[in-house]
Image (tube, rainbow, N blue to C red; front, side, top):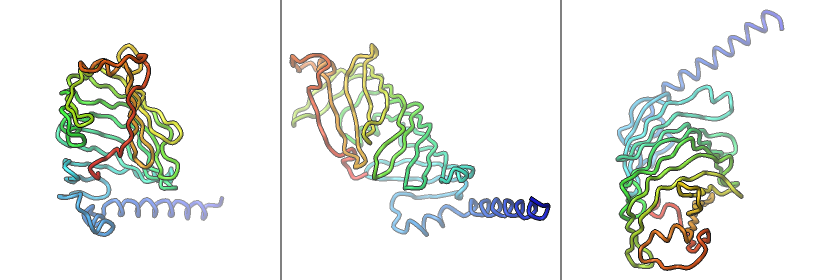
Length: 247
């Protein structure tokens, strides 16, 4: 490569970097009004594409979201940002990406889901301990579902008051650990107690249909339950939409 060609290459690199810098300074409010004209979710938007924050609300949940874009992700042919989401005592932070093939990429998802958030989704009386997520990651697209999933879940448990078959009951939930994995396009949490004994399996697919299986061992924590199956046997299985309130 001669000197002239090298100069042209560096000029092009400089021009692209400048255009990216200019693009990142575009006000976030303008971008949302341009591409999300029926916006009913985000309010009080401040900042720009580079970094900013907004209030959000959807189907009984509300909070704040903060973002900081990752320009170098363009080298990987994807859009990326570091994101923090707050709602009451719930706090989640993650690196989000969007790549070719309409693939959503979640990396380094950490934080906690508080009882007040869980109650909004399912109107039960939840234990005071939040669900903790750590080192969680997965890929998702509508056609193939979930892939490359891994991560951890911890929950301190406590008394859970719930409604099943139009009857209110209670369960003394033990402390639980969960391992995240993917299988046949589904995202699955293998739930165990602190002695690594099988307690439950929770999974959902690309259509966000939730499958829950509970073992005999877990149901023994319900005072009114008198089942006689083997401890590792799944004795209750349900399937329903993951987001029942139209989130």
